[in-house]
Length: 274
Ligand code: PXL
Image (cartoon, rainbow, N blue to C red; front, side, top):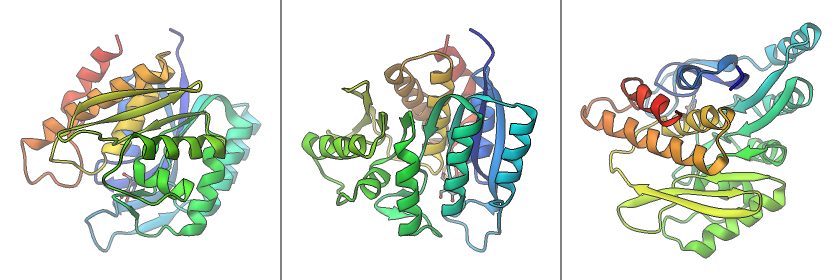
């Protein structure tokens, strides 16, 4: 396999095992050169800590993009996660248009459990809808998918509800969709993959100790597998199996509430890619 170089755009939460501090090591471990564009710097993530700092880097983005264009720098894929403002979404679209030579992978990291993360509003969701329409691969959870499509969020649902969400996402223009956290059975959860017009479902055990940051672990492992040449279904499966390993590794210590211990099991992800 040839050596690939990708760009990931998301925040640096200095403490909290999410976004760039997860994406950079995971994608690098997949054997891929991982360039970064930090969207903001926070002292911690926003889920469970209070009084965190937030330095917005929106205005750096077009300058960085202009320099890359001047240098002729291109990426084999761009993967976006948590973005700091609606304006950043516009700048990410410019990155897609000017420096991306391959897949555009969008994790619309903005909400979970039926609620937007602190600091996001409807304008952000509206802009995110436009970004998602230009993605080759969209990796939302159910809350994000509902917000993008204007669907009521439910915790109990059937296949018809999920199919309706996926069709609405597809009609927004999303090409391939990996919908995470889809559970049709008690004690089980999984991912629905909509790839080239076909649906498939990968089910795995549901672990009760859900940890923060697993969405970022999932999207990073998915990106690593996809850029390694796996199809969307295989990448979605590898990412799910690795995320389960991370949650299991974290369950051993109750006080580790702010993130998942993904590092001690990184070797398992590397094995899954072989
Ligand atoms: O894991 C998503 C995420 C990323 N970055 C920041 C967050 C969150 C979720 O809360 O707060 C800053």
